Image (cartoon, rainbow, N blue to C red; front, side):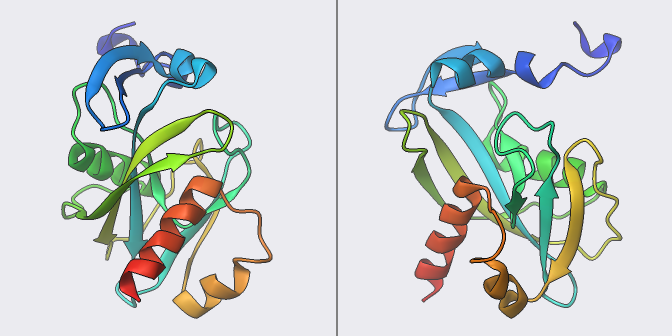
Length: 176
């Protein structure tokens, strides 16, 4: 399928496969990378509004990874040949339904271990979005902007995407 034919199905999107040092070792379709547990790259973006609240959402039940779970990050896989920064901006604009965001600031990168033999390099970014959001219905089932204390109160009550929760915990630890 070409770009002229429409969007490439998520499972067919080509990803860079990387090693434990985040060096590219090959390429594979997303569906194959997930099925075979091939290490790849993801971009996470913490989105804050003009009031410094954090965009929180529940993922749709059709998501390949962590369906119907809550997340405090937007983002997704880094495509083959794409940089973390490019993926962060693309994913944030797509999921929020906006255009013209500033480039997200890179905060840190870590290797997420899912505990089942799967892992992915995760670059955590942050961006301010002062635009009205129209979240992508294929990605976002529910959303709200929450203050940090509101978010913190929900950490033990809601079912969170484990990689996003790990990224958030690392962010809190780094900020002291």
